[in-house]
Amino acid sequence: MEQTLRYGIIGCGSMGREHIENLQAMGGARVTAIADTHGPSRDAALASCRDAPPRVFEDHRELLASGLCDAVVIATPNHTHAAMLRDALAADLHILVEKPLVTRIEDGVELIERARGRRGIVWVAQEYRYMPPVAELLRLAHEGVAGRIQQVAIREHREPFYPKVGDWNRFSANTGGTLVEKCCHYFNLMDLVLRERPLRIYASGGQRVNHLDERYDGRRPDILDSAYCVLEYPSGARAMLDLCMYAENSIDNEHITVVGDQGKLESLLPSLTLRVSRREDWGRRAAWGQPSGTGKGVSVRRVWDTGIRYAGHHFGASYIEHQRFAAAIRAGAPAEIGLEEGLRAVATGIAAHRSIDEGRVVALAEVLPAGW
Image (cartoon, rainbow, N blue to C red; front, side):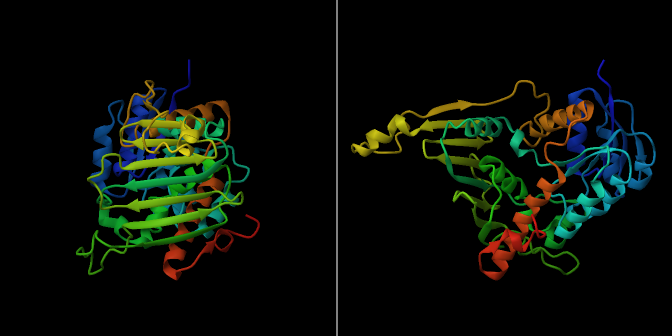
């Protein structure tokens, strides 16, 4: 029989409780310990545990030293990830850490050095690649269905940030900035589609609508609510992010488009729609005067994975990621999304914020350590 893996949850806010739900649905896993300094979050997490009740800690270090866990999930506020990881890396445990990995590059570099040679894997939870229509888009893109990829465009038009404990996510000093906190997922996905690392980025953004009238201890939130970002890659391919966080009246609020020299792929969420078209289906007709935009020759289908037992807030992606994390632990395999990859996604977000602040194109080499 498959070994039951014992999990500790560090950080019992909304995302920590989301991890608990995924683990309980997955099977072969048991939440044996939880830790959080916030009493109401601990109580809510404990109430969500339907199996044998886990041991409850206020201090994460006591959880790490308890001997109750094979793996830990770190789902604390962004600016605490580095400190939590320093302690977790010293323990002989497998680690799944929420995105963004860190809010400062120097912390990420330090953690990568600390992790060298340890037995337990460290996996950065950037689960967008596992959403069923996105996973299928990636498969088709890498099989060459669209030909040589030239452009990737990701649009997210959504609601504002949700409230968090202590309103920590209202300030860029805690989140790393919106383009780190929210968008490292998308920057990672762009790199994955193109199988390249960006050279430079130009971004324009601001705080236009959200949180302008809010005050916390006399301070006004400073998180951006909208931005455009353009990334350039070594091959000449480009990627673009279009983010708007006051557009909750959208039908499909996430739209990923991949365009190659032979076709186009599109993934839409939450409708779980995948569109696929090839230029030979309509390219010659367009040259002969046929109008584009007719949809002729475009395959449209809904993509879902019936093996997903808990869809949660990410269209089943967190469930699939937990399956793969557990499989890697059991097989002694490396993490699919390691620390270096997690740090690169953060670096792109930091470079985008620098571009906005300074009104210029920013090279990733300015943000990452020499040799990266």
